[in-house]
Image (cartoon, rainbow, N blue to C red; front, side):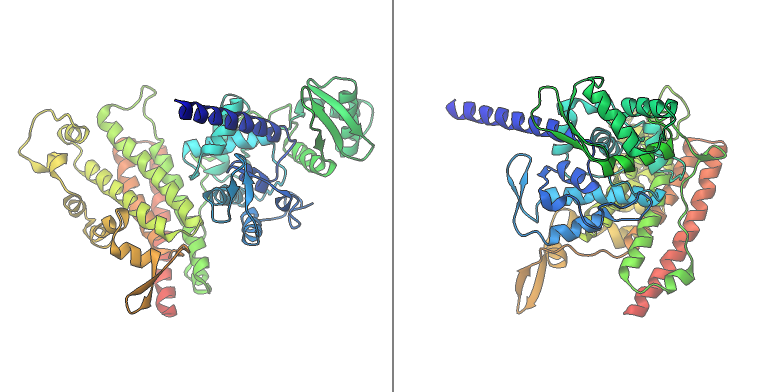
Amino acid sequence: MEDLKQRVEALRDRSLVLGALTKKYLAYTDWSPIIAALLLSGVRPSDRWADVPPADGHRDEQPISHADLFAELLSSMKRPERGLDNEPVVQTSIRFQNAKTILLFWDQVCNAHKDYPNALPPRDFVAWIWDMSQQGYVHIPDHTWIDAFINNYSLKHFDRVLPKEVLAWLTMGSKKARALSPKHKFGREIAMARLEAQQAGEPTDDPDEILFRLAEMMRNKKVDGVKLKEYRRKSDIVYTLDGEKDPITLRRDSFARQLRRMIAKGDASSDAGKPRAPSTGGFPDIKAVTISTNTINRFTSNEQLMKLARDLFRETTAYVRLAASLRVSDKGWPREDAVLVGNMVRLSKLLTSIGTFAELKLAEMLALTVPLAIETMVDLKYLIANFNPRLIGSYVGSPEKRTPNAGLDWAALDLKEKANAIGFGDVYTYVLQDAPAHLHGSWKDLTTYHLTNTGDERFHAKLAWTEPNPQPLVTTSMLALVVTQGFADLIASGPPVEELQNRIVDLFGRLKIADEGFDQFLDGRW
């Protein structure tokens, strides 16, 4: 009993410490992407992670890879960092892997829109990344710390980025759409300061003019819960929150960048919350990856192939997600259709995970997840090809009555039978037949990915991850498009489905070019 009491008290103390820390960090005016990724992965950022020289002072339109900067800092780390739970965090910890995943995702978003902000509003960013992971756009290996920020302040109930804007920015690749609205902790007060400056004939885009007026509001107690501690013209604002002793600094250089973004995207108090839905004739504007045989012939490294394969895979995943979101009635799908829709959603989530593992260059994880995705495709394509109430009934475990036709009894079918029946026999032979060896573990799996043979039946541990090849991504993309085409044909109709089919045919053609080009490149290399 005493031991249980001690454990409960330890959990309570840990919760109190974590609550205080999340409150402290959420009160910051802004986070850099690297600081954000560390905090949301349970790492307390030390000075070495702050003010990264290549990122310091950069303009929002200047390309920058925060994932690369993070990798450089991590590789040079000499001693463990401290976790938000005060535990030591070593270089190989999953917390750093978690942070890298977040930064890779952030870099993708920035690259898609040629916008590279280095100052992020904390509450908005936490809510946004949580929302993205919930919707399946990014796979976060460890949710513990994001949930800690979310649950301590119920961020999921306010300050959330509008789902339609997020969808527009991330999956549709529009240059016009933005997910993170140009909000600021003092957005309302900044809007008032700009209005006062305009009425006084002063410039509304001068950060020093706006900071001066904001400081005066704090001094005159016109900003709820905020007390001004220090301000000098053309310098930072230092303030405290009611009930808190630690001062918070609103840095002039960060504020200047944020103000430029606010002005460029519209006043923070005006239409920041209005959803934008970029489209082409009512169809989402999913960015098409440009590809040609000549481009591939100029490649000199496997990484160039992988980048192209990842881009094509991301485009494929967007169409799979779009097909899974097709809707014919607000009342929901009947059970027969829901079986197909549910499998399509499952496929889209597996593809999202595969895309993440490909970005992280984890061939071992691709060996586990690609077969799962293809097995889902086999099930889905078989269900589509043999769509029948009896088959669906046996699938969900409540057949109308036993049928002598084994093709309509899901429990009587094995994976090989289903694959052969839908023309995926070769896929079964080359991908699925050996999948259990990797899924459940075997000597073949160990010697392929986890051990190095030194000769004479002696082995060393292979701790480094294996770099993947592009073919699994291309093959999986092509198979996913075949299944998606059949799903869309069966489940819905009309102009959007026709446009989807046209896009699938176009993407399939580009994937074939990539497949042939990759084979030629690899044949030439060997």
